[in-house]
Image 1 (cartoon, helix red, strand yellow):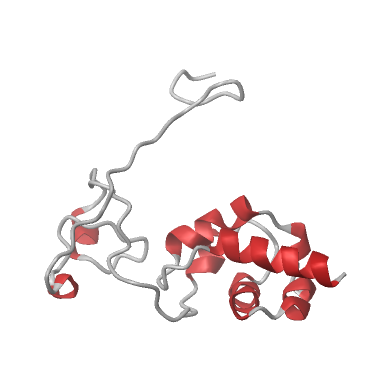
Image 2: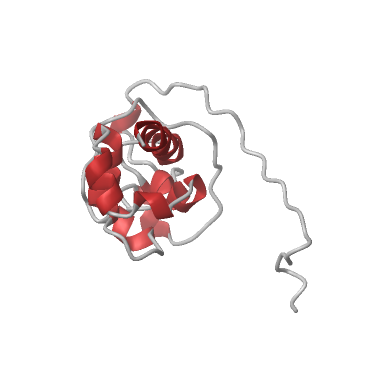
Amino acid sequence: AHSAYLGRFHNQISLLAEGRDRVLAGWLSPGVSKHSVMGIYLSSLFGRRPLAMTTTTNGSERAMVPVGAYERVMPLDVLPTQLLRALLVGDTETAQALGCLELDEEDLALCTYVCPGKYEYGPVLRDNLARIEKEG
């Protein structure tokens, strides 16, 4: 095994700077030093290079927009956009039909990472699973 990879008995810690700084009219900047999964910033033209990552979300939650980002990162055989929408609105029947009972919070981590609406899908899934269990 190559020494650059983590094995099953290894531990790793990642630290991110707290992103509390607000940029005045930040939506106007071309994003030369910003990371984007969808390549909407100017930094995507410069190729891969290290960018400073922080915990900032650059604004508040927005509407869930189906732009195909979830389908690109979801490794499971589910319809992620429809499932995530059902979870957000609390439609537990549709969520169950789409496979939410087979998921855990960490299964939706990549969907949270690429979400243009800035939703945390892990807690949303847990709330829906708790509601399903309570309703029987």
